[in-house]
Image (cartoon, rainbow, N blue to C red; front, side, top):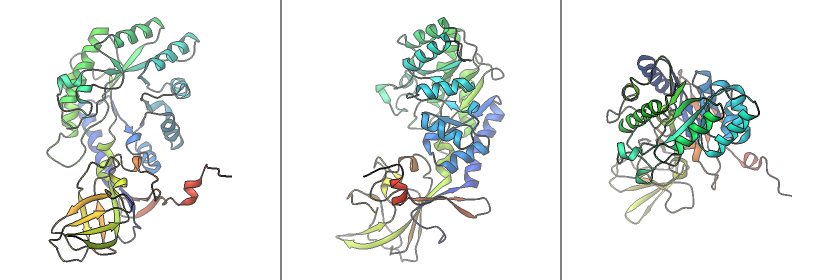
Length: 394
């Protein structure tokens, strides 16, 4: 552990492989005609995105930048799943030119497709992102709650009808559906709701689909409080059958957190510890900004590396920033921490590195731990040179 210079994220390749293998095995057993893709936005560390490509997990992207990144890192463009509400004209053109699966999210994108078809340019087919009342089927399970989903063409207010009619009039085949929702509980209800909605849409419009993309939001840890990959895929299959034929229609899923969260630790060192009132303030070289950009969490799975004796005095673990609320957690009955001790936070690969700000200190280094336990630095710690790159100031 002393070989790791803190602060640093460490990606464990063996754990990463286990997560990918678990979802891949579930798909192979329950819906063999399937694609396990990786949600790049969850953690766009170049080493991680490239690793996914090398191991047969195509990128799922939601921006022009992610499209360019994935291609630069070796992903086959025809296999990249193109989603998101802010696609640019260039992204749309390049993705359609190579025949990548593209799920339309907005009227602007639909207009571009219709205009492209009118010019005789390549449009093999497209998918449509579906907006539906998931709260009706799974109350209390979604991040949007009663406010409803933001994305896609709504199935109940005529928007989806309009989109299908416009595309058919332009001679563009609707070959896919995309239904994704952020689940707070990771429960099966949201996936059952998505599958049943997709099935009803297929029946309503007589669609012959090449793909159904059921998004991400899956749990991918080791807790028996949440569904397994097999339980998720089984619930999806049961909701889609018998209308959707698994031999005909490819099932796409796009997990992010479920693949990378448990594979990443964050290593920090104690910089100082001093008594303040009835507690001890323990300052570390990591920060809440590294792990909890929205400042919502109050605790983490962690390991302390210390020879200190247990103390009943509360120890407030604080970050390096000048924010008074940069407090990660309070320890009670833990070893008395001193300068040089370490705190390792576990299962922190999801929406951490991607949200890290350039506040006071810049980006921390990242290591990859290979299956033989060897370590390699895959991103050096950012300093002033990296921060100034691309800037002018004269």
